[in-house]
Length: 433
Ligand code: GCO
Ligand code: MN
Ligand code: MN
Image (cartoon, rainbow, N blue to C red):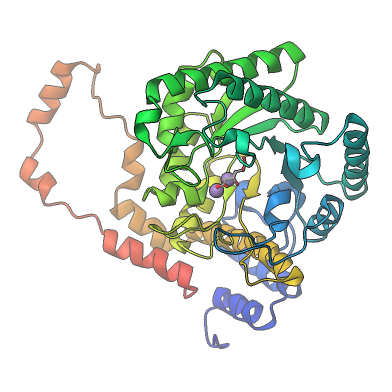
């Protein structure tokens, strides 16, 4: 337990830890922030340090807090929640918005009249709470018709069925004001690899997305499509398995400017990759349209845990990246409460996702402000990465002439202080800086 003999910053942490009420220490914390004086606009906290504000852009899928706890080995353990109740509960915990699959709100067999009633109720809940629907998506994975694939099924009629369903879902999103349409191809893949030549399947995938962007253009929608990569589950292997595969694929499309990615923490981690590296490259390519936040350990099944509950350091680098890169999109949680939880645990889960993000956001601000970390970054030569490699007029001759003046052995003797830098980050995250 922290004591009052610690330095001031630590004291604020200690009290918050003890009483669990961040707003109580608002004054203390702001005093400390002011003293450290380095909180810039993208990392400023406008209220209690861990109280979400609308500008934080936290969103949850209806299917996340509404998850009933089914898994491959067990049946439901929680009652299904009414989407209208979910909207009110999300508003209570400070979320900015709610997202949905077409059939999370409107059952596939609903009549047009039933659809209108459901939408009207849902819209009333949105209007009374101020919650937005920034993203919608389409379920192309639950029903038996999609067991061999949807947009890349071998049977052209299944593909046509899937594409028409996607176009209907794009309409639904536009009706609800969503400007992002996520496309997660959970069933686009194989177990018996002989059955799915990848190149032809990718041709069909591109054809489907080209049809969607043409439709979006014809309807005059503002919608942009975000492809969500995943390596496996539910298929043995899924097409477009990583952020990198998706980024390359997008460049082959008819309207690449309308298509980006929706990377998910769990999915890149399942592939053994660094999530924040994938996200950084998506940002670099101007393609981070949306993001799915949750937690996952490498080598496990698709865990979908509460954000930050595993791989905390990776989660920290991700939050630091989002908060310092100018990313203005949603912070969307695509995670599930543990199956052990009842109705209250679901909201402990949702508040935990938000709270951990905000704690890591504060850590990111401390990282930027910390003089020792800044010094260690200089030892690591981080600022020099911004210096162009080419010299003089940029020619090969100028480069060769310059290199002749260098002392390779001296360059080889340099050291970079990474042990100290990483220890500082570790101590920051462990709460002793
Ligand atoms: C998963 C996926 C889904 C998608 C969702 C949006 O692993 O099940 O992450 O949750 O994100 O279907 O299309
Ligand atoms: Mn997932
Ligand atoms: Mn997801």
